Length: 360
Image 1: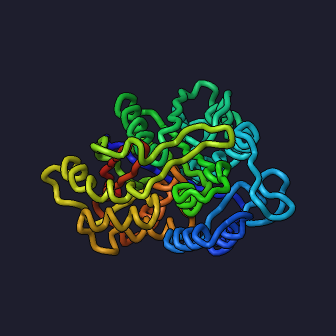
Image 2: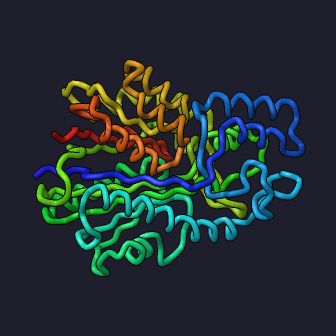
Image 3: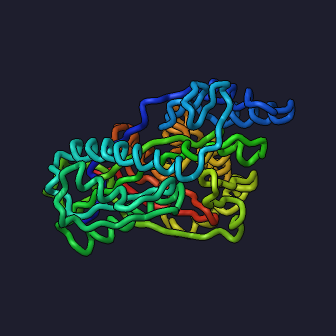
């Protein structure tokens, strides 16, 4: 029996900020010279984003004493302070997305047999998986796996693992939960790479119910056909995610979109083989330039990436959760039929691929 995504649930923090307000906030930071302000305006305006959600209530200029001072300047909380906020906010956001997915699948918490949690923006133990079992009322015997620090590409390996579990155990019902609080690692900087990171990253959570049992939950969804993973020949130092004393530090060089543009054709050709490419593509929107490079590199029509651009516009780059937001839109869109190719990119550079089909 084919494995399918029966449902996808999503959740974002209650604080939503416009891209224009965030741009002006970063440009107004003390010590910004004219060149830095010009670069901030260019990066934020070119990101293809209208609004983003954040777990930081003070981001945007409201003083909170942790991230934003009374004069509106960004503070430098330690990694410990940032991680404590992750420990407080991430389980709640993950549970909201998971409850939505379970409800939409028309199953009960007792039906879940396996749990795969995904995150790269914080650490603690017992972790997200433990809290989900407790907060959702899952059985204590649920088998847990955690995929950590894989970055923006992690949702597809999580779905691949869920598929492997359901193929080995046909009665398994797997809950995949991705939660990322990227904004916790925001920092004041005139470094162009940090400015680009500040212009795109946001917070969100997404969960998927995955099963190969036709009798479980509602019919339909997305069939998971196959997966592939590839490392590009270059890019190891262009997308890097490390832990610093004042948060996790993202290196995101201007070469990333260009590397993706050069490498994507070969990666996709190897993945699809002799099959005709699908009409619909779910591509992780690392930024508008990444989508532009994929579109050009694969000679796709503009409408092929419509869902990816819409999620980027409305939500920003929520790291691993983002691709599930895109797939959720496609599941609900009656005009999307047939095959869907999903692509996501992570540190390395890594290209993760999946081929899905809309279930009838």
